Image (cartoon, rainbow, N blue to C red; front, side, top):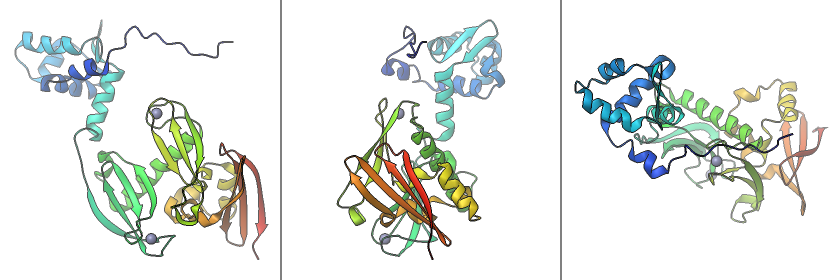
Length: 293
Ligand SMILES: [Zn+2]
Ligand SMILES: [Zn+2]
């Protein structure tokens, strides 16, 4: 059985070469036109007409610059390749071109540390729910600028939360949300945090992205937690992360052991409490339910 994936690297190009090929507005327009074409494929003449360059020699010069890496010439015409489709989508998502910011808006939820009303804001590609008083960040999620468009504040909050939840689920499956590389968790302690409780850094071996989460948050995709809430008539999917105290407040954690790590998260709902214990890899190693009354 083969358990290692080998890939052909003969067609790889250096990053500076790939990006230098994009330095012309005609080339960006070609990628945009193909990106909006069904099947990402068009003939030379159709492409030239839609890009709107009458000079065939000039148009062909720029098309050839993109051909092989961003575009492939096939018997059906010119097809936008994976790299070209990524550039097209990044442009539409506003990743390289837009820098929206929003002024903070008060939410209805209170800061778990000081009780001040939390605020929602967006800057530098990130949506945050944080406390204007103590500066505590209850929630943060990467959200492309396009995620703000055509949405009300409520819809932005929902989209941001859903993105975060799916991101945590992927991360807990060991897959980087950014590059698809391998992610592993490390339990970290920081004495400057309220209660000095541990949290988790999930780092990607490939791109170096580090996603920081609270321990409680990593349990959100777990069937034990989902079914516990379901039994109490609560749909976890319809509850925002910052509304779930065990996901944002350290007081719900109990450290049983540091070497090896054993941490219990207490999750109270109604008259019952679910206690879930995880190890240093954030695997659930034990759980039980207790009556709170
Ligand atoms: Zn606060
Ligand atoms: Zn990565």
